[in-house]
Amino acid sequence: MHPITKSVFNRDLFEVFINKKIALITFLGFSSGLPLALSGGTLQAWIATTPATIISIGFLGLVGLPYTLKFLWAPFLDRFKLSTLGRRRGWMIFTQILLTITMLLMGLTNPQSGLIFLAVLAFCLAFFSASQDIAFDAFRTDSLNRKERGAGAAVSVLGYRLAMLVSGALALVMADKIGFQITYFIMSGLMFIGIISTILSPEPNPQTIGPTSFRDAVVLPFKDFFSHGKTAIGLLLLVILYKLGDAFAGSLTTTFLIRGPEFSLTEIGTINKTLGIILSIIGAIFGGAILSKIGLYKSLLIFGILQAISNLSFMVLAYVGKNFYLFIFAVGFEQLAGGMGTAAFVALLMNLCNSRYTATQFALLSAASAIGRVFVGPPSGLLVTYIGWGPFFLVTFLVALPGLILLFLLRENLDSRYN
Image 1 (cartoon, rainbow, N blue to C red):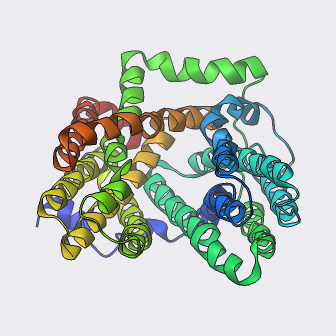
Image 2: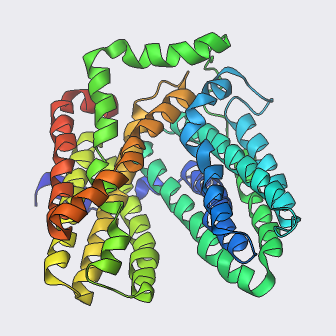
């Protein structure tokens, strides 16, 4: 058996997951993911049950703006230590308490008579949630050694996706039975999972001294990252390009399944959403385990190749037409590969951060990685219009290749950072 294959499939593959630190990060990942749908899809569903206009519901999408701008106040969380809990845990528990209170207030609000107030609360929820993400990303990065970061990324995805199921699909089922207001009360109670986990977690690197001034908190993270010259620029481009092909394909996958092979909404909901989320979680866990065995570079390369190839399965589906078994294979392959790639990618971001400026650098890097997701929509629509679905998915495969080439060129740097 090949030595890499043997090391991946031996009995201690998942040994890295078995410790208290990883378990607590799983629960903190749940706390991080819980508020997202409550200021997004679940909130829109609630407003849609009222006489509110479609225009009003559309504008509610703006409450999610803090998630894309969180790097603007990340230096504040790097600079100041809020309490005796430490620089990371102090901000985490502060934002978790604010999230709990905000959800309670949303549950007390009647959208028919207080829509504007509810929208303001939703914006606050998104702001506090984005702030919790800043603190949690920094906490996770500082807490884990390099060999644990793949597992830490994997269980974060696990907790986050489970929370999205709870605050999304489960919350809608609950709201249908007991109403949205009581549902938001229950969701606020679930935030205590994060609060308790934060209290039980040790503060990482308490001896590390953060920036001594707010100016340093803003300037030094950039100066530190770009002090590596061309290598830093290459790594930043890798962050932007690595998931770009995945984002390109994902931007129109649901539309393709409806208008291409013409699967029903029930089929898409069951396979693409429910089964897809489960398989992405499995992929993340398996990817984190493999990463702990074979290292960061090899994991990024293997998972990146699988991500690119998975796009071609949708190209085949586009040419074959409506085939349920091929549909399951394409979605399963794409979600498994995407989950593995996400685990390795989050580990990459963690390894690129300096512990003095983790909050700011991670927020900036994650914002850079989101560039693809934000801007691929318009060109995707144009491509499908002019060349069709099959060639479109071929293009998404080709778009993934520059990131893989750049990854190969940066091999030595990535090996030195992880091993």
